[in-house]
Length: 285
Image (spheres, rainbow, N blue to C red):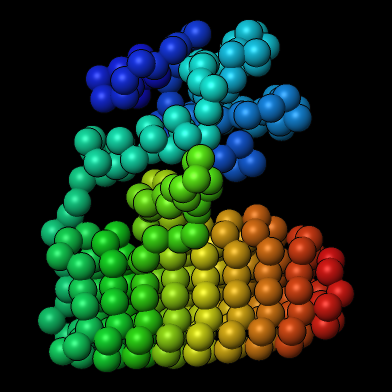
């Protein structure tokens, strides 16, 4: 899609230079293809220079020429963040930019409790899956074979992305997905948020997740990782395979935890961790 195409469903766009994008993303992320992002002040210009995937930028008028000189498509706005998420919502509501809604594909061998709620479209449930009472499976959720999901869980809800607009709060609806690999075991009261844009929150094969765990949007969990009760994995965090996440562990957003790491009970992790490390209680790596 071109920036100039947005004029079909967004009013009063001010375009300084045209450009093409295939997805949306925050400037701290790297898209798989060219993406549209936003910058509200010049402290992010160095990050933009290092992010080749950010092909189109929404920014304030005083930064427009500097960003155009980097060869990026540029939209001008006094409120770049608001315009960015307004475009996101318009693409979600008015176009197939994030993909068409597919019919449900639910294996006949799946055992789904009568009180569970399954979205009317965009759900894939594999063979021998078990889904417990009062669990909700949202749109754009794919569940592999031999997965067990306990009671009172929400898989594929919107994540927590919001910001102030005047005296109100704008909550951002999510367009991504959740992918749960085969053989995953999940207990009760678990929330797994779908991806924010057109990307996925991924739970690798044969992971085991205890009660009352929250996994936020765009998190990537490697195969065979075990996550104990009350843990919270914040958005865009990436956990390697064969890890242990102890009870009440908090993992900050956007960081990477290596393979075979042991996060001890109550640990707060705010920086990335290399492979084969044990992170002790309240020591931030």
